[in-house]
Length: 467
Image 1 (cartoon, one colour):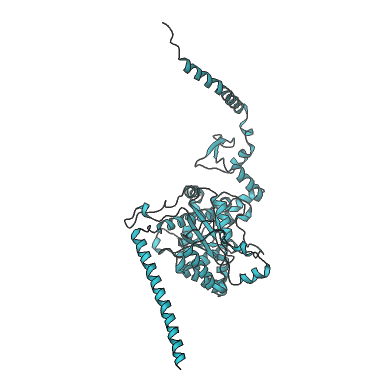
Image 2 (image 1 turned 120 degrees about the vertical axis):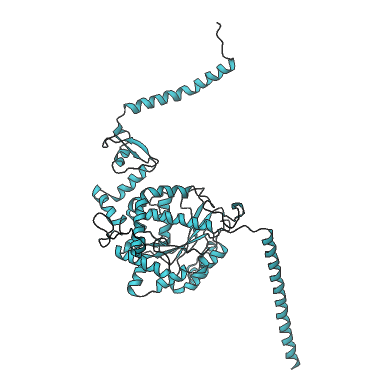
């Protein structure tokens, strides 16, 4: 039988493919032989070292570890080098690592409520008999139970979040007819030095994986710095982020009316990045310091954002001091801000985040949270989050305090859910007609009011001439 030959065109194509691909194939074969001959412990000493102290089971990659019975252990590769570097900055031996869970993570496990094994001394099976303190302790145990594995799931949901993802069909209106903004805007408000900028840096560390890089300047220590401009922060450090966080200037407890008016202006007119937060006492400093007035104007090219959700930040150590001393002025000021109608987008209360709780004892931390929640009339479990920004230790936040890191992620997640539930329907042609007619009626009323004022003055002038 005669052999059938391939067409000339097909032969040419095969020759070209073989000529192009033989070099990569030889290189891959050489790398494969090299890996087989290399001892497993010499592939990456840094990964081998971290494998001794960590173990992850979700979305992980196996690598060799001779200390385990099976010879393999799992670890997430993208964060290996960064976690090792951050750990070297904070701990020098393994003894310090064993002490960390007792001091920073499970701070609420006091001898008064827990035994040596970390179990509650009181039976909490009967939910009807739970006191507010036991409810709070049970909530902290819930956060500790799911923090190690749940934080990755929530972080992934925040990274893939797009505006309107948490919207639910209500009122017989379709999603296309809802006025959903391109980006959800979260506004942080609170008194001066309450920890808003520190919370923003903590968001960058936990959600954006930025380590210890400070993105927002804080007033920690002896610094008297205060945020003078509205600052928009993309805490996920992603070009496709579905939300942003605005850091604002702290309110002065001695002049709360001016601060509340400023917050009301932000809620009605919107906010813009680098927008000045000037008050009456600042103009004297500006005029006396020779500050250029052009530098205090916000660039109109920045997009104006509509506020979708407000998060109130409060200093738990100052709250504890106020309750202990009997001077409830700071607490009363916080209540006026929290219950202000302008920051409420619906019947839901704004979220309360308590910072600087690590500056007081565990008992004071629990008692102060219970008191402030009762004072504001919010649940002690779901109404507030106790988040101590422990990034000063020199390690990643989820390693120093995974409970606080998960609480922060859950607070942001709940803020986005609350924002998506409060979207309003788009205005149709009937709404625009009603708005136009109302504007015409206001103009006509203003015109007649001006005529009445003019003729009243003219009549008074004629009466004076008669006399």
